[in-house]
Length: 347
Length: 141
Image 1 (spheres, rainbow over the protein chains, first blue to last red):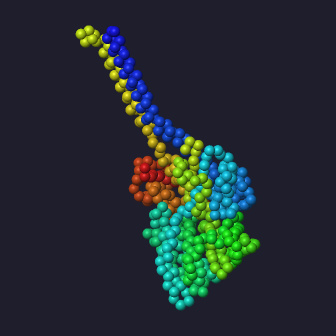
Image 2 (tube, rainbow over the protein chains, first blue to last red):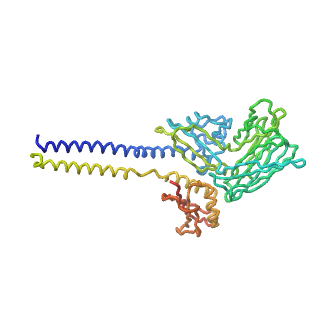
Image 3 (tube, one colour):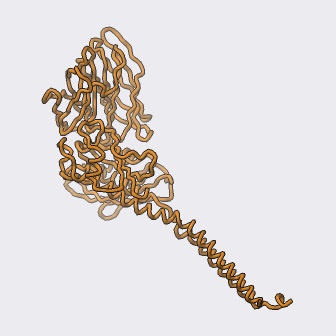
């Protein structure tokens, strides 16, 4: 065999080995990036879907107000509204606390999408933490002290506080502020004759923009046993400026209904045995609705908010990969955080 | 002896080595071409745009500019943007002249990746002034 043939054989072998190694190396290096481009495309696609449901009112455009109507096309925006302005009733229809809530199947049908899962989560823009620190009974009344902390993403906030206390045959209000460390003190006095559960409602408002307002509730015993958790006796479902009260146990007697915002408080007028009219209050504030009543000889206070936020609705992505999109939205002139999670066909 | 004297095949080996070097060099180029990481552009742009649109939806943004109330403008933006984001705001009039005489920002820059959003807003007062608000955002990578 001539020398040149052996050399050519070795050269060809070397080139073939290098080609295979190169191909393998290129494929291993390029694969994650190619997958990344697919992710980018999918992210854009899913973002558009999420955006559509947030900025379109759906069909019929007033599907939120009518409890018997399921949307043909799903959309949360208020009719004829500015961008990212959600309808309070459409939001209430996706709250699992409401008896008028849509099912996930109805959502998927209205979305008209296959192989895509969605989840909606709406939270307040500020977090309010309430802790009772002390109580003192002097004469025929008891004074309670609370530490209130207002924060956003664990960053303390300076706010003004408007507080209401509801007890048996007793409603009172007080004001306070949180300092630069986000902490404030609220003090309230309740007559001893109003013994039973008592509800403290606190609204916190940013001094620079009234639309940055949030609420928090704290139920505590006033010279009585610990109160039952909220929604034990009745379910409260506000929709279309009407509050529907559904007893969870038999033998419930309703007494009074109240609505609170940052700047206003009012009693709720009953429209039937189990419904109340919710007045339209011109205030950039979430509404807190409280209903009192009796279960036999036990007095109770139950409450909800309108819109019923915080809420989580849709698919459970606990262990699944998904894209997450955050929106700053307004509902009835109040800012809320909306998070839409989407799982696409390739995830 | 014949193998040692016959040097005609060496050119093939040299050729193969050059070819190998060429191929290996292309592999080294691949990461630099495809290694453009996903940026935060979409999410930051979306969040920044929403903040400006939402603040301007009831004329709040333009009224603060009209009043030259830069402290309140900073506080409003700070209240609605995520805490983890750095921001800087520059306000221009219709002649592209900067009108904020103080820095409207929440601190030092925390990343090299800065995105910029321009938002046009109009005053609700009778002079109908036009303002361009430039919001720059950056976040921790």
